[in-house]
Image 1: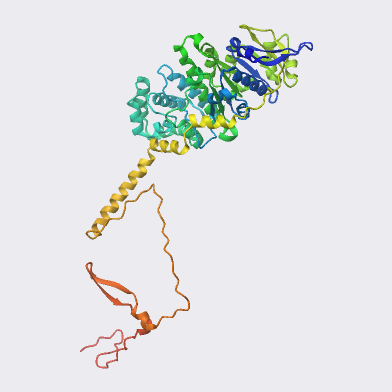
Image 2: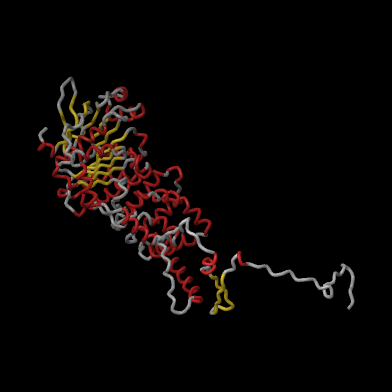
Length: 539
């Protein structure tokens, strides 16, 4: 299909009805009602997504790809058009030396704070479902709502808010919500130590586990985000989010992805200040989306269309989804594409494709073949079969290194700089510095008592400076040299002894060769008497 037609139609498959093969795609307006792909592993879902993304890139559309495996993102990097190299934001958490700042709590409008809080709560609930409790949710929700009102706060403030009373006091001076402030002032402050420790320990354990990773901490711990999602959407940029589980961990991948999707929703909703026709379409591709399918995801499906945030989501089987999310998917998605599925999913999907296709058909689909209901001019078509197209045949543009280096230069910061800022924020450096100052003062007082007048004091101790080690050279005397005994006695070292602090005398060291023992005293019969024990002697 000519490139100019890709502006309005994204081609991804061809019909196979009675041997008649004709390529087709989906129109731009119909994509605003979202697309849903389901099928077993290896059936061709990622190939369809890859082809659609490359079509969008060449058509000049703005896209975001959230990939929990990283393979798809790596492929897309090889096909970035020459004229779009500077449009790419490559978000790779495993690039530890140059972390991108992503603060989910930054500059949230007062009317959207509850959306951020509920989104984060949904993420935590999904990841730690087995250990989650109502009390944990209650305390954590009030923690997040308080931090959202405090300028410069990050996810690192969650644990500090629970244990650092001075930091908590500073935060509460900025809190205007009476319910949130009442919780901290009237309720949390009145917890006894035992109850407070039991209440906050699970939150510290779980959130602390997430933030203890230097990879994650250096991203979410930056108070200023280095990427602007609203600007990315409005200027049709390309956001590639590499969340490879094998590099950053499964939980970290899910948490970062869910937070990114939540912020994309808020960025889309902030477009309310623009006329609907002026909002550029932005396409969000989410592979294995069950990893990020929180309850707030249902709101995105129902509300994102009017803000021109268009979703293409894919996963393997329905049981991966929460019941509420599954209902939102099938209630709001316009185009459904089913690859081969298992028996349970076939029974569920039969309601969508019956009577054209049955459960038996759905479980026996060949590889790369699909049954789909395609949105055409705002109306869902009758179910039909098709064959997905193979990977697009284009020569790699060889722009991978340019994209990575350019994105790093524009959006990332050096690791050392980020960690220094986090250290200052945490107050740990101040504690060490204060300890060093106290020690230096104590040493100065002690030395001033015994230090003679005019003598300089030794330099203060610096805990942040590595000590310099000086090795004195050792000069060995020649073996054949001989020293006379008189010369040795002449040059013998002296040792001081004193009867007072200010007066000292010296004397030669006694050498073994000149030592003469004192003569043994002679016995005197007149005075030396041997007295037997037990007897009294009278004089």
